[in-house]
Image (cartoon, rainbow, N blue to C red; front, side, top):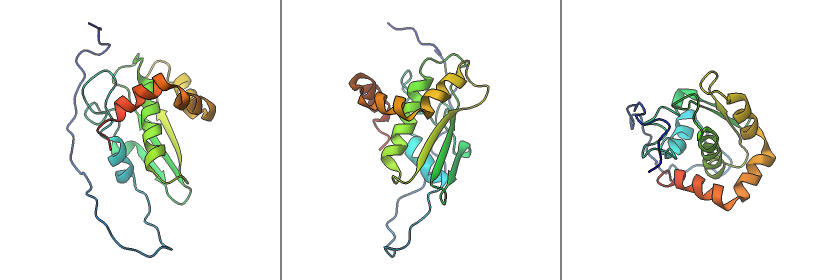
Length: 156
């Protein structure tokens, strides 16, 4: 049996503030702006690769750590690993980034950043997550994409 890095993670309350989906007819020339709440809905149910919990339940993602510049077509998500030496932080960040790239309109530039002071190698991880070529290469790696997709199961 594999030893867990964080055998007893702290769990946070979940499920409050869910936004329902409701079809609202509108003109084809108008668009509804994307909000932090909507972005959070897309990522809150992503599974942790090590534990049977969501990133929301583990406190890795929080709505107030999401910034959306709708006019500038930019979304930024700050993630907080559960422990400073988490070896899954890059995979978690990649999962969040890929989920949002799949879910948001293509015009959005998505950045995922490790919260300052929350990880021993946050600078290295942030560089990897910001590097378009590395992210594209990761998306072409079948083993890595299987791991990402396992995290995304249930987050649809």
